Image (cartoon, rainbow, N blue to C red):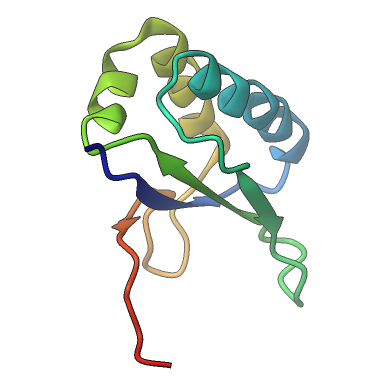
Length: 111
């Protein structure tokens, strides 16, 4: 059985990149869905709204369909094109890379 993997993508955008980056995000999720690389769980997208207005940051949270899906996405030309276009819209900041993509598994708590 395939186990979904949650990824929390953090994008540190250049000050003038919000419009272009949003257009890329609008293409990203539907492309992943069409290729069945992600689950039916809707993507969640957040923009930082604190005092750092001049340093935009976006977080996208979604579930890969399984452990191999992210690797398959790297090999697909449509997804690779979107990812390559995202990179120059971002910048390293505060000692962190321009983009981060850690994967997470659920943690069962005794509640």
